[in-house]
Length: 411
Image (tube, rainbow, N blue to C red; front, side):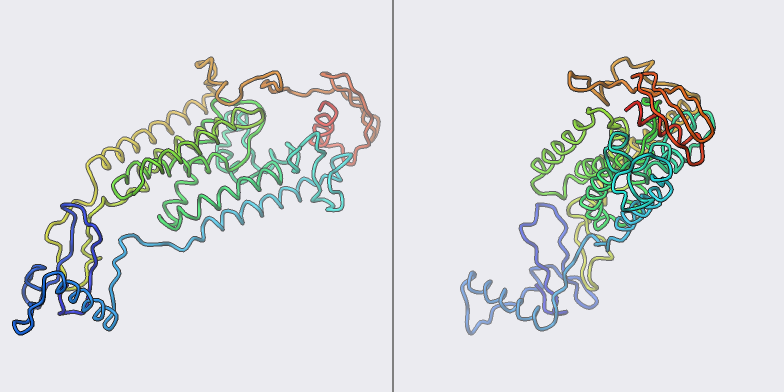
């Protein structure tokens, strides 16, 4: 446009009313029309040819003196999400070291790995440790949260995984979803969103599934998916192909939630994490509306004739409502959990959200019980549910080893 500073600003198909930065000369402001060079009277040119000539002159000036590219959003270098992946893998290795299958079980998978070998497939088909080891490492067990007030298990369970297949699926999902979000919004907002959404998933799981243990980062991952949906909604004005992106994201979310109706999958953690992330997206991932120009992004000597407000009114409304719902929901959930409330007593159909029984599988969790008779280091176990009996040689005779042997016998 102007030639005072050798700066060219290109506006491609600007919307009506959008902000356009105009050059300002020394000591006074000029409009775009006053700053354009006038045609020479000795060689008049047609309007179209004159515009083409001015365009080429602007390009040459931009190439010679530098072209300023105004980038409205900062791009972050992702390091937190890879750090989360590394932490999960390290904790899984530590869990397998603590598990020590050869010492606590009769048979192990991949015995060549020594104490890092896996539990028998009948006990853990995901190639991982025993349930008692996961419980020792911090798995979510509602009875310990309620009666021993071990609320920290709502967070620690997010970093544990039941097996190789489990951690592989979750970490690949975290890389594909989390890295893009961290690049766009930074490690602080995405880190807080991941942890708070994971906590929300654990909290909802504890209110509906109060038998057995639960581990995994799935709740936090569904939180990231939920935040992507709310981010698209609250930043609607800056996106192209909005409906296509919205429908694609909804289909992906529905498919992932549908997988949760299979047995042994904690779909309540998925739902709780998704709802938490959906609300957190309205709080953490708000962008300025389309056409907003920040003063710090305008080069010296340029002014914006009309400044749009940074955010639209609906963005503020969604921010306030979401924050209130999060505070009320988390507070009420923690109070109900610590009082030992089972939400299934108030919702007779909610258990179908986590598992739908069919002729191929049952959704009932079976507790295993065994009768035991011990002679020295010899243990005779009889499973009450199926009547099977076997004799084992104990290495140290602790209750954890006996529980694992009973689980194997009854599986």
